[in-house]
Length: 639
Image 1 (cartoon, rainbow, N blue to C red):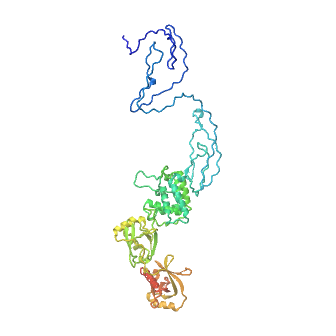
Image 2 (cartoon, one colour):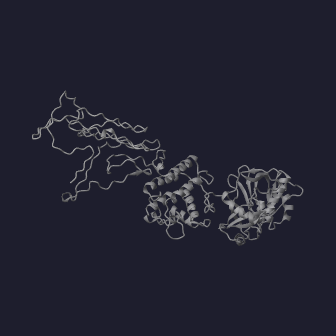
Image 3 (cartoon, rainbow, N blue to C red):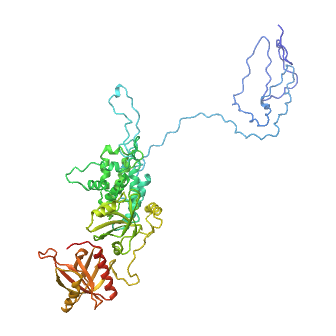
């Protein structure tokens, strides 16, 4: 078989014994040492090797992205040597270098791995200093904490037959105790970490800035600020308070947060739906909470669940029963299902406690609210200005009405009418109630039917003003006024009543027009009280020469009051149906008189008395006579 040989390779021949070359021996090389001469038949032991030195690991530089790096000279194969070759090492070729490539980063020389020894022993355990709750200027100082006990390291125990019946080492972790509205960041005794800490005071009046619950729930933090601002105001909170609306909005947002909605059906759930299902009081008598819920449910001015819920919140603030309702909710698991425990405040025990503490603070604030003003709670928390208008029974009031989306608007006040004389009703106001009969969501013609049914009786109107407290138009009323303007293009809001004799000076006392007069006396005129008796009754009183008394005359919408000027003692109350006539003296224009019924239940029939007064000017006397005559003219009465 033919043998294949590489170029320059000599076939294997039996080695001849080598002899040392003549001449001086070359210096020993670090990489090549000459072997000792061997003889063919005998083999001698190899010379002792040098001590082992750890090899330095050399790696080639990383190749460049544009070209390949030439192989390193450290791994170039050596040329074959023959036995008769000179002992001098052949010259080495110069190393190949890469054409202008960035130099590789220098690497640290290899260091032999050091044998690891066992770590040094740990320092002895030192117990930690006891932790205390952060100090707060508004919270009470906590009592001193118990001494610190070092942490116990628990290990798992086997659950074999020998340990059957032993408690599990990693039992159920004790819950974190909460106070003031949030979970404590420090564990309490009984949990896995035995670090005792004393909770701060649960005083509901301590509302400091370091309260932990305010940082956890933004709504509770905002409610705490609203309560503090309301307390700083001082005095009872009324409908004109600037912080009342924001407080009610925060309470409503908390009651609605996390409220679960039914999966099927078109009825959207609101907080009123669980309020009306609260259990009644256990005692025989109805408590304040039950009375407030019954009033809110039976209110005719609210039509939606939102309006009834808002009406109850106002009733609860004034009656101080909102905290009682929340406690009953917490004690009724069926009603707690209305809230999601993870996203609600009332459904979470940790957040419900601080909410109750804020409600307890609200019970210390006095509220003086107009609970009859609730017609706009279905639409807004802003409430209009309300007023009461009382008038005498008459044939026509002189108000032109227009119905817009269930609201009864006064579009015009007729001249020379009873409404204009009383100077109370303005164009743009809303008739909300007549003698206790609600006109909310009224149909066309309903107000006229109520007035027809109450014909001959004194009337009491509950009015909603179009002008708000700051003088501007009541904002929730703007959509109604826009629709009213489309129906009646010439409609204009009336800003003030049309006074008679606006150029004349008017004397006001206590917000009403009072006349400073002199009461000259009175006399009986018999069973006839017509205007003809004034011609003889006035001279009869003047002939008596009685001492005149300083009095104040108040001409009101439904009656005339006479009171003593010095002591404000009421001398007489005369409703318009009891006045038979009024007039002034022709020969003395500053003296006037009117006849009133003195004994309407007399068996011989009604008798009349004539009262005579003297004013300071002729114009004032004429104005008083006209005002009494106007009220008497629009009055229906029978003797």
